[in-house]
Image 1 (cartoon, rainbow, N blue to C red):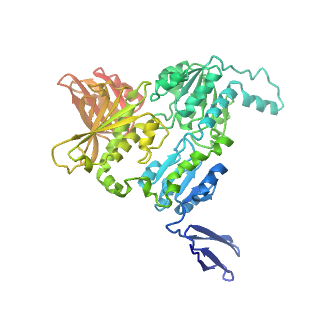
Image 2: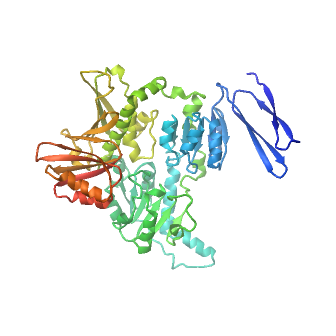
Image 3: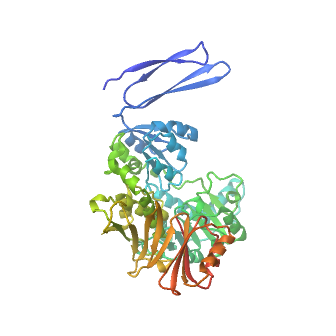
Length: 599
């Protein structure tokens, strides 16, 4: 391939200074800069960007340090730009030159990053478990894939959790600081043994499982809480799955390994600390937001929590004046869960993050077999895509117990012939709705089927062909989850599955069936479902409680079996009611059960 060079004359701010800059026109991006010294103005930098040709290698921006082996592999297929410690402004400026971005937990990939990319950024790879630092909504809007490598740091995170567990039990950090300060306080730092103690692993995913294995090796009795983990996997390593309340009430040590979701945010708070055994010890190598940090300080001061060992915080880095960080009974580390030489050097997870990019050059269309028609499909199915994800989210929030979600059946009712209705997007969104609320995995059109298979979730599809006009793509979508228990018994159908059904009305997704009850509520905001005895005044009683807390009711519907028999009331709310308000609703004599569901 021929290469030509163009000479540009760049004027300086100082009329006496000028310079010429040679830019290679080889079809790849090149960035060149010139520094000029100007009188009284310091150094000014001019940056010249050369545009890439269509057959160039893709450009991968690595914004945080990765192992050399992984970088060498990437360099075989792509132009790799390693630029660390970029400010948000610098990242926004640089991203327009990049096809892929690889980050760890320290770089915030905000909406501004996607907007600044001008549509060029196609893959964001997160080298690690969580994806809290990526604006997923903005990524979706800009057609950018977000992928992570959750297994890359599993062992490292588990080992760090065990290290903190042992260090906390034996006061290692405090004793070390004391000796270095010239003291010798053997009696002050008497620890506790791990053998025979009960460890509650909260979140029984990959890291939680590895922590449990190692704790068993230390002679601990291990229990776990994870409403979506299969009981057979726990039994295989000698771990008992229990309820949340049982776990926190019986544990001597609690180790947190759940993702940060709306459900798990501040899961450990004043109320839950009050249910714990006095003198419990807590380890967190998951996400800082799962603990109410102010409540933890209160629990430490009162003695409910004897010690805590924390690797993660709600805001990182935390303030040096933080009462939690400075507490004498707290051990802290600066988010070191994945920081081992081995984890940093793992090649496979790093390369897999941008595999779709490097395998297909700078044209990513081939990673979606139906990309060419995707825009038309999404244009027509947009409200149904939203409906599908929200039905998945509703269904999985109704699950309780330790059996795990394994069997999902999706039924589409449509007047269209099967060849005229591509359901792959809908299936992917239902998978997204079911899996994302209970894991740290980001599900997209590309990885949906693989992610479901990896988690042991079998999704089957059925179509009901209706008579009538095929103008509307779908009449309804029904989602059923089999072989599980429900926290809202009325959601169980006559055949024993959790069942939710919805349809699109005037472009807006609606919930139209829960279990055997017909309802009609817009899927916006959040929903309260109540099973009640059908009698006058129920809507007013519930509405009055919500109104007193200034919670706006957007929609309300009642479905009943027969007059004066059982009914299900579905209430759409714009805001989340307080626990006290929900408790007052549950105390209304005619209400037999209720559940609050976040969309």
